[in-house]
Image (spheres, rainbow, N blue to C red):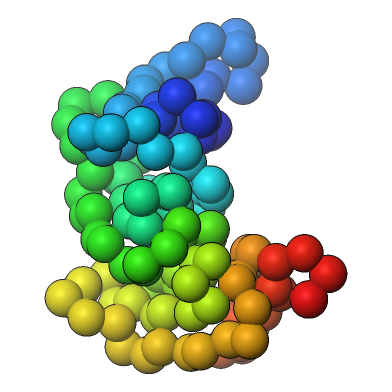
Length: 138
């Protein structure tokens, strides 16, 4: 699977190298995709974009329509969107990390204020921990 700066998400056949399906982010303006994550426990993938949104796709229907969810999560560039069980952890240059429940995306469950913009998030499958380093050397 890949996400590109041309606003497309593609699913690839590893043996042939051919694209199996693809989807466009649906953003009306050109917004860069900054990160992609997939889930080991579900057929979902999440991308973060420079328009502040994260989008969740169902890999079973990737080429057949828009994202399953498109959430304006941040005021700045959304730099990461990490799927973790039934949650999305999003981070941004706006110095925040937000934890979202996929079953109800109207508002984040938790907002964590950081001293610097957030670069990426990593989760640990055996615990309820997530690690989110800052941008640059911070």
